[in-house]
Amino acid sequence: MGKYIRHACGFCALLLAALLANAARVQVVQSHEYDGNPANRRATIARYQQPRGNILVDGRPVTGSVDTGEQLRYERSYLNGPLYAPVTGFSSQTYGTAFLEHAEDGVLSGTDPVLAPLPLWNDVTRGRSRGGDIVTTLNGRAQEAAYRGLAGRKGGVAAIEPATGRILALVTSPSYDPAELSGNNEAVASAWARLNHDPEKPMLNRAVRQTYPPGSTFKVVTAAAALDAGVVTDLDARTDSPDPYRLPGTTTRLTNEGDGCTDASVRDAFEWSCNTVFAKLGVDVGVRDMAGTAQAFGFNDTGVRIPFSVSPSTFDTHVDKAQLALSSIGQYNTRATPLQMAMVAAAVADGGRLRPPYLVERSTRHGGETVSGSGARPGRQVMRPATAARLMELMAGVVEDGTGTNAAIPGALVGGKTGTAQHGLGNSGVPYAWFVSWAQSADAPEPQVAVAVVVEDASADRGEISGGGDAAPIARQVMRAVLGR
Image 1 (tube, one colour):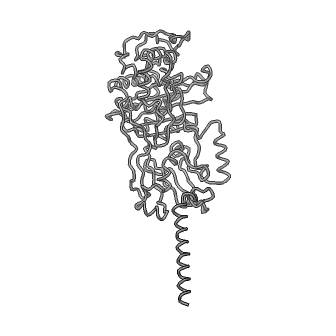
Image 2 (cartoon, one colour):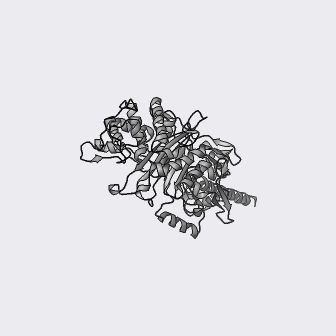
Image 3 (cartoon, helix red, strand yellow):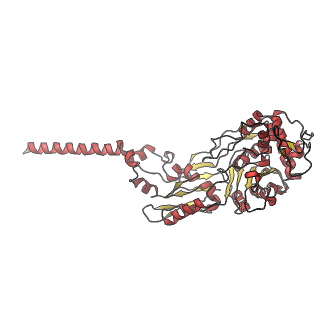
């Protein structure tokens, strides 16, 4: 009898070993195959079994999690959703994630290994850390000022701290409430269809994902190229600039909106936005130096991330002289995002040094312990400091005596440049209104904010839209919010 018992025990041991080997094969060798199987909902269920980490502005969360009591237990909620949608994006159980919710999903969902005190133990147990928080660089008052200023008109606003590259405001209008997309019911599907078919495109992030002809705001870049190349040495010397100006190699004549641009000095041409002077100036500088300066400012850079991607702004490097003339006044193929033009203003304000913009200050565990630091990166010199100083002088003149007086702030030094960009077939579209600027309190050692605003309100009459009239007041409110005035 003992012999049979021993044989039975051995056979059972073999069966047990086979079961353990098969379990190991399934859990170790084939685990990724099962994890990636669409029929396996365990990962999805686990993802929503705990609250998601939060996105913070001024130290306070602008996101949250709602316990639904259902299988996919926690849904995302948003405080002032339309205000912060261009930054947070959405986190949807049906449609995935966007913007910071996507770029920082590992921290927010708790799957990033940096959140685990013992990462190897989490790998073995397939455990999940509590979602961490993302601390943004945003200034809540500046964000609100930009949103109120746009007041539902189509457009975008970006504001940067010149000395660091911290993004202080990132606003787009019209906007939407990301909470409408959080769950997985019929209402979410209906909201998704409505938002995607809305002709006003509320889900389009116009501050970083839409490019526009920058119009006369690009004259800041043209002036920088001309000063650095030595084409301009005296801001007050009269230029050889006819009005109208015949584009080289064509019979097309370029004109100005106002009078007094014939042979105007660079200072006067900048303050009153003379197209003829700057078109000819761009041709005198040449394609190589114009393109080099534009690219130094960030044009044609396809790798900008803040941490989500930014649509590249463009300056055409393969143009004839007529096309170069138009490119130099922000037309032809020249296109820019509001963020890019805020970067231009910030470089002027920081002595010619451009700090890459970033939106995330740090990531923390749920309890507040920092796990990764600032997104700040080293800056680069994009023009000579002396050139930047002269551009600050020119931009201050625009606000003091030129087309940008609506941006003036008592007790602060403000510089700016207006722009009215033509577009559409035969320039028949309503012009886009631009304003780029920087501001410095009287008691501050350096400028504290650089802003770019674009307004593209198709309901406005053509004669009523302008950079000084429509965009400058918005920039003024954003700058006042940052300066505390």
